[in-house]
Every structure is written in C-alpha cells, then in structure tokens.
Image 1 (spheres, rainbow, N blue to C red):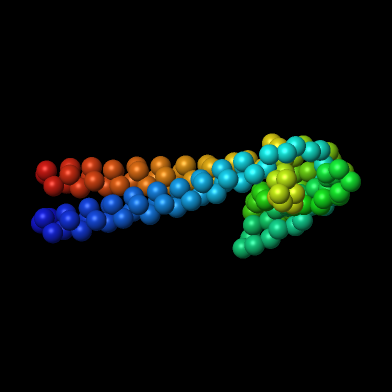
Image 2: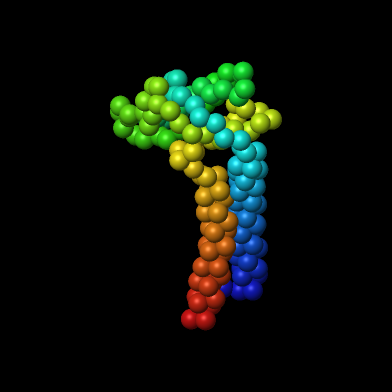
Amino acid sequence: MNKQGHGVIIVFIVGFFLLFEIIGYFSLSSEIKDIRACSESAEGVVVENRRYSSKGNRGYTPVVEFHIGNSQIIAASKTTIVTNKINPEPTFQIGERVSLRYDPQNPSNIRIEGYDKKYGVFDGMIMMSVGIVIPFLAYWFLLRRASH
C-alpha cells in the first residue's frame, strides 16, 4: 500500500474515533444531567403498565402515581425493557409500591430505583470505548500488514 493509501486510512481512523467519542460524550453527559436532575426521593404506586410494541419487540413501561405535598403526579418511567417474546410479562404489578427519584423542576421526569438503570451512561461508555479500541486495532492491523 502506498503512502497516500495510508493517509486515507489514517483520516478514516481519526474520523471514526472522533465520531464515536462525540456520540459517547453527548450520550454520557445527557444521562448524567438527567440523573443529577432527579434529586428528590418519593414512594409511588404502579398504576399502569403501558404496552410497547415495535418491529417485533414488546414490553411494558411502568406508570407510577406519587405525591409531592398535596399534588398528585402520574408519570411514566423512561425505561422500557423490551423482548422479542410474544407475551412478555410486565416488570411491575399494578398496585406495587416503588421507590423513585424525581426532578423537582419537572416532577414527571422520574427514575424508578433499581429499574431505571444508568443505560445512557453505559451506552455512552460503550460508544467511547468503541471509538478508542477500533481505531487502535485498525491502526495496529495497518502497521502489521505494512511490515509484511
């Protein structure tokens, strides 16, 4: 492979790295901002399991009722655990009590403790890791191939 070909590949590797780092960063920072916003705790009751169905995947999103002072809040979880099972079971039963965290500025923004995992944090870390590992592997492969 000539030097021009190496240059194109290096530009591709750097572009790949930057793309995944940027996606990972925004995913990570958005999720951390949301986690920090949900700073207050409450106890709630599951009042509904909203059915989710898309492209063969099905699941349920728990909807919780809780109280802040004299105000009644009904809010859906941000997380829907999906499966390709034909008849998935909801994670929560109607009437089940749950601990949750909510955003005092926007109480409908909730995170059910033990259910709403930090998927965005995990996704962001995966994207950033892919953005680091794949380009290094590609560069290593390129150098190894050039030496033979």
